[in-house]
Image (cartoon, rainbow, N blue to C red; front, side):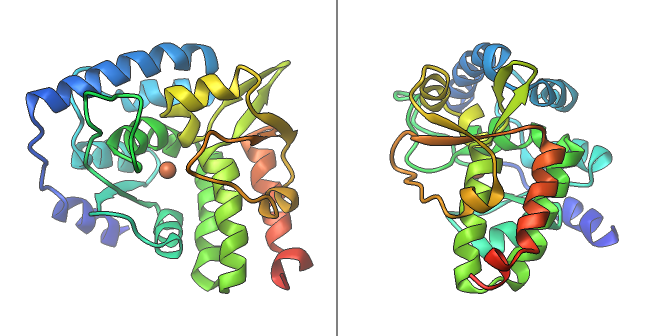
Length: 245
Ligand SMILES: [Fe+2]
C-alpha cells in the first residue's frame, strides 16, 4: 500500500487544458450523461455519482486518484501514447490504471482516433469503484503477468468483450457496463438499436471471438452479473482451453 501512496504523491503534476478543451468536455459529458440514464447499468450510475466527476471541466488525474484510492485502492497515472496490452493489464490488475490525458478535437466531439480522456475518465474511472469489476481486473492482471503470446491474444479479446464492451442483464433489461460503450455516442446508439448481435457471455466463446476496433461492434456479450462474469473468467483461465491454447 505504501508503494501506491508514494505513486499518488509523485503524480501531482497537472495538465493545463485550454478553455476550449474544458468546453469540449462539458459538451460531451452532458450528452453522454443523458444517454447513460437510459443505457448505463445501475452500478455505473451509482459509482459515477460517488466519484462525482466535474460537469464543466476536465478533471485532473491526481484528484481522481485521491478519490478512487480512498474507496477502492485504485490510482490513475498518465501515460503518453499507447502501451502494450501486457503492461496495461498487469498494471490495471495491481490497481494502477494508465491513462492518456489528451482530449479529442472539439470540432468533432463524436470521433476520437484513439482512446482520449473522455474514454478513460467517463468510460473507465467510475466502474473502478465496483468491487466485482476490481476482481475481474485482478484476474486479467495476474494472468497477463505470466501469459504466453498466444494466451495474451485470448486475454485481450476477453478484456475487449467485458471491460470495454460488456453488457449486463438487469431484470428483463440489458444495460452497458463496458467503457468503450459508455464513452461513445455511436457505440451506445448502435448497441441499443439492434446494430449488434447480443450473446450470453461465455468466457471461452468470447476469448475465441475476433473483433475489429476500427468499426462499430457487431457482436456483444451480456453477462448475468459482474460477479458471475468474474467466476466465469476465472473458470476459463483455469481450463485447458486457456492453459494449452
Ligand atoms: Fe479503454
